[in-house]
Length: 411
Image (tube, rainbow, N blue to C red; front, side, top):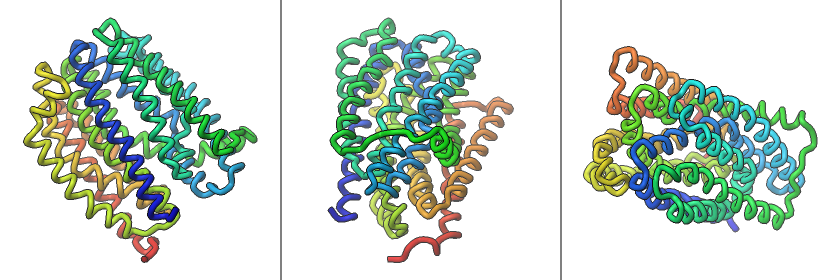
């Protein structure tokens, strides 16, 4: 299969998965917002947001660093198996650190402290992702395995959700069902690894430590980028009411679903750009997707009431204006993401990519501090701040691309 056809196939597979990520929440979120009270839904959404930090600690940037390493040694199955084994060992150690961080957060945040078992089960669900090794299949450009894995996980979870979740009393079943879905997917993934004749093994702790240090810069970028989303929700849950968290959550679920649709392009182009380093690929992507994104923003502006009614029902009507406030973010986040690892990262500008994220995250944190100090912490201001910091990150990355333009390969 030619390189161009491989990119098309992998992008199609990732789009199929992300369409599922969009469609399935459009089934489960409206169901949960209707069977759970606003307080119950606030717990569900807030804990999921907090677990973003836990997942970042466990993943530690390996989806980028390990994908890069696998892509470089894809023809050497022994080396691929070693990389996979060391990454899994590193993630196992990191999961213990993540559990400590979560325990500390539970001491200071009421929503977590009041729901300890739900929070712990959500942690277990995150920890089981260690065995899903998506980085392996990203590096090998075998995206169909990731797509099938996701379908298996979500089909089990969604089916059991409709069958078993009926009110707030069933809240603990939500992370339990996700754990079950992950276990089924793990069985499938490891059957694929065996079929591909990849032997996963660990040579030494020293190698794992070296890989952790190598991946740290990617982790910094990932953890800094959470300031654009998870940190906003984290503070919102401390400052505002559970009802406000639920309203914000419904709007953000739609925004997250749209941004998931951006990920297939980002994820499929990254390993290709690592090898080819042709900026013309990025130009073509922008010409195709920017008009589609503009069209989508128009749909959101005129259809916010309908979209929030579908997601949450009448009791979440207040989420419609919040969704409109996110339109600038929906537009700018795609080029901001694209000019990161798929462009700068592909030409080895790891430090610059991470620095742009950290600078934008620092601006976000500073903005949050100013909103709190000036008593202007509202959902509108929060949405505008998020869009502004994404714009800052895009401008910084675009400037770096111009500065290092000669390092891209000409057609």
